[in-house]
Image 1 (cartoon, rainbow, N blue to C red):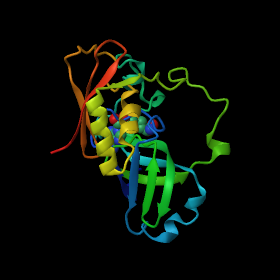
Image 2 (tube, helix red, strand yellow):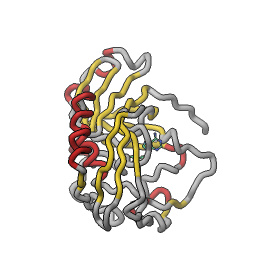
Image 3 (tube, rainbow, N blue to C red):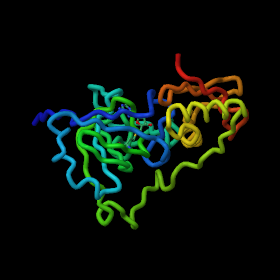
Image 4 (tube, helix red, strand yellow):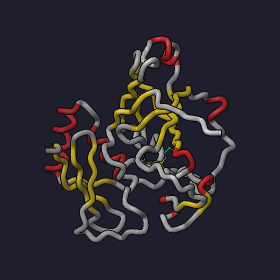
Length: 231
Ligand code: SAM
């Protein structure tokens, strides 16, 4: 059976590039976005009652990694990026139907517009459905996952003093928690685990309209080198 699905809305996200987006939701509470609902879901009736809910599940399309050939095994970054496991044992983006799911915080509800945070979704992600988080059913105290038992260890993020001052200025302009966002994303160490970067190698991504550059001055250290409004 082939069933066609269509987006109920699109997420406007702080993440303008895939690189450095946390690998799961809630790892960067400062990661914010706005879900803009499409007609007819932009009517007040569609979100009636949602103000009673603190978190929602977003079901979405990994629209930037859709592919035709199904993969049976993938290399999750969590396992170092060089060990293969069955696709259904992972949350990899390359998967049948390209469907993702994330629990995010619901910060504000208005007709046609949901403000969310703790997201791990790229700007422009098509959203297929929204469901309320139901703590008694979704929070499993007895759950375990030996491949990903705990959140990854966070790296302490270092700043050049003038770069931190620049980041505070950009945060003020954007009216967004940009310094926290940079720290929470870089603390996850976005680089592929199999790369051992030299201190000269520069990495970068775009958050909101700001280009962020960093490097690894020594193993286990990460330092922000540049925070510049994109030209
Ligand atoms: N929490 C979701 C899940 O379990 O289905 C996503 C997990 S997936 C490992 C998270 C990664 O997906 C992010 O780090 C980002 O690089 C990537 N990503 C986010 N939105 C995407 C999109 N719209 N298209 C392709 N990749 C995306």
